[in-house]
Length: 198
Image (cartoon, rainbow, N blue to C red):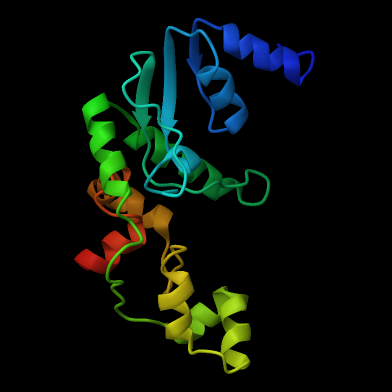
């Protein structure tokens, strides 16, 4: 049933006794300010401290929250790539699972350390990196830094790929890797691939 307006929709969510959140700040805020007995929070996308360690939407130690751990994923547009969109849906459905509060607290502690320390780079592909990231290409062409320097200074913190990699195919073929990323053992699937060589 369509809502009347944003205010009506917000209040409907806020007053609901049970809420299964979408990955949106609108729904999250309504639930957080609400009166629900049960709130099902998907731990993925912007709600994942692994995928976005700079923001925290997980509400620890609140008995109303139930966590649904999702494998690492990015948004796919149904209208521009229908086949990949449905592959992503299958991937999410196959690997989504409930996670307990202790497991989520461990995940948050692990994710807090991402982006710190040594960056591992194996098989850096300069031409791939410069084709994919135009800001890096501009700096290299302007003789400000090399492609590898750009990756180490800028790209690594942003989780940029430094060689061709299909995260959806890798995650689907390696569910253990997807689970390890979802649990915060690795910051992303590319890091798992780079560090384990699988």
